[in-house]
Image (cartoon, rainbow, N blue to C red; front, side, top):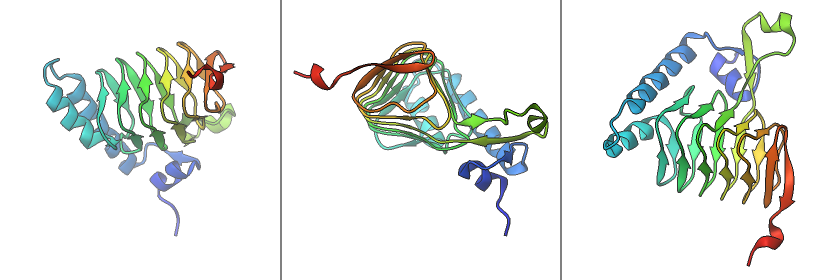
Length: 189
C-alpha cells in the first residue's frame, strides 16, 4: 500500500503539497489563523478557543496575533508558552516546544524544505524535518529556527539569529549562522 502525501510529509519524504487533503487542511488552518488574527484586543477568551482548535497545547499559553502556521496540528507547546507578535511556524512536520518557552517578536520556525537541485525543485515536490525546542528556552526577536534543528533545555538564542544546527542545553547562542557564545552552567547562583 502506498503512502498518502500526508504520510510522506510527516515522515520527511518528498511529497506534493498540492494534494487535495493537504490543501484542505492548510485552508482550515488559514481560516482559523485569519479568525484569530482579526480578533479584538479584549477577546482573549475567543483567541484561546481558536488556538485550542488549531494547535496542541499541554497547558497555559499565549500567542499574540498575528500568528501564522501551515497546519497547526503538527505544533505542540508545553506549559507557559509565550509567542510575541508575528510568529510564523511552518509546521509541515512536527514542531515540539517544551515548557516555559518564550519567543520574541517575529520568530520563525521552519520544518519545510525544497530540493536544492533546481531541476528537481521544478517538479513541485517538498520535504521536511521536525524541530524540537527544549524547556526554559528564550528565542530572541527575529530569530529563525531551520528544519531539523533541536534546541536543548535552558538555552537563550540572541535576536536575529539563524539557527541551522542543533544547540546543546545550558548555552547562550547567537549569530548568523547561530553559534554557542558561552555556557551558562556556571552562571547559576
